[in-house]
Amino acid sequence: MEGIEASPNGCYARGDMLTRLEVDGFKSLRDFSVDLEPFTVFLGPNGAGKSNILEALSLLSRLATMPIVDAFKGGRGLPGDQFSRYVDERSHQIRFAAEFLLFGSYAKSTGFAPHPRGRFRYELVIARETRASGTEHLSASHELLRTMTSAEDTWVVAHPEFAELVKPSDEAENQFTVDRSQVTLIPQIWPEKLRPDPRRTLLGRDELQSNQSASVHLVADNLAACQWLRLDLAHLASTSDRVDTDGLRPDGSNLPTVLADLPPPLLGEIRASLVALVPGLSSVSVVPAQEALSLEFELSGGERVPGRLASDGTLRLLALLTALRLEQRPALIGIEEPENGIFPGRLSVLVELLRQEAGRKLHEEPGFADARLAGSGGAEFGNLMSDFLPPQILLTTHSPLLLAMLREHPEHLRFVDTVHRDRRRVTRVRKVGSVSADRRHLVVSPREIDELMNTVKSGGPP
Image (cartoon, rainbow, N blue to C red; front, side):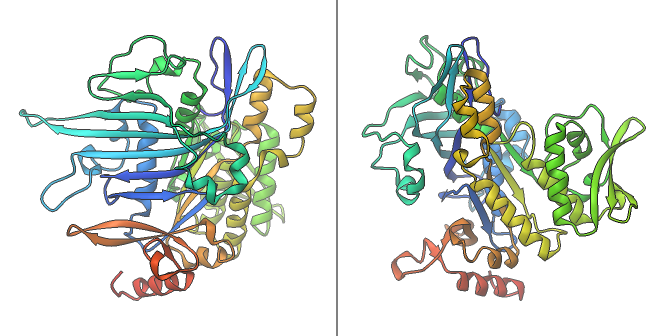
């Protein structure tokens, strides 16, 4: 749940960022790890495994909110298909690790109090066991949430602008650990004994969702509050049910209903941004269509165009802008191939808008300092923080256009391709920048990316 997490004695305001993801055993991701920015673009040829990165993160998000079997059934393919394939069999486990920068707030009914800032690492291993009956059983064989030490925190060293948000620590402290037979928690999280539940992760258990540990809430909320966009033009152009307001669906199929449910100021921001991006457009509105709702666009000459006749690019831009202006802002937005159907000139403006949106800083927001000085506290200040916090944005693309657009900002780029390991093709990710001989396996230059992308485009070996 994003924003405020209510409890009998207080509430939580989300303030966090996912800084590193590690995956081993999910589809093409074997011993995979990547450091993330507030705005990260995964660039690479088709079939390199870019979508698998977002899918793995989506699975981890579901595992923090629902039973393990349901989490796997919510992904692409059968549950067994999501485990990496070896030469003659599939992996028997998937290992996840995620590192977070937490700078959220804990607001009790007596007033606002900041939660200690810090770095946390969450680890999870999902085991797959085939029984004698032929059925398969999925369970969490290991789970851990702990603080990180300053000595191991290479991300903050590489991002000194975030150092002020981190409380240095010389020792790692386990918040909780879980194995097949035992749950160990610090008293601040849960004073009583808990037994392992093989059906779901500890992070997503109801008992912990009602406790007073801000660190558990912030990590769980970050994973749960992720918005995934794999927009489908056929669904974007159609009507949507009037009662369907449960957040924007990944395919955008309920876009009219989500827009209709937004407060007028947010809808006005979306309109203004869309008009600035689409020449000849003067407005967009939601209109009734019998028992459903549909989109209607107004051109500068006064002509009205129904959503089903709008261009691919206009519909996609509207959906992306809506995701940025949802009333309950996601902690993270993952967008697959945002360039589809969008004119290159407009794409460059959109990418810059996304980059700036993810790069906003809380203290730079108009009105934030004034509101805090005015004495906002408790839930009111928590809601204010949630409104101002920008989402983290991850994109996947195979378009060289995005490489050209971000040449001056290589820190946002991660190049994704495949390599052969143990007679299998696995996904590799590298940062983009200057390359030295001893770091070639970690860094790729923009020129090398150009050559690799051109080779793939011409039909040569990837």
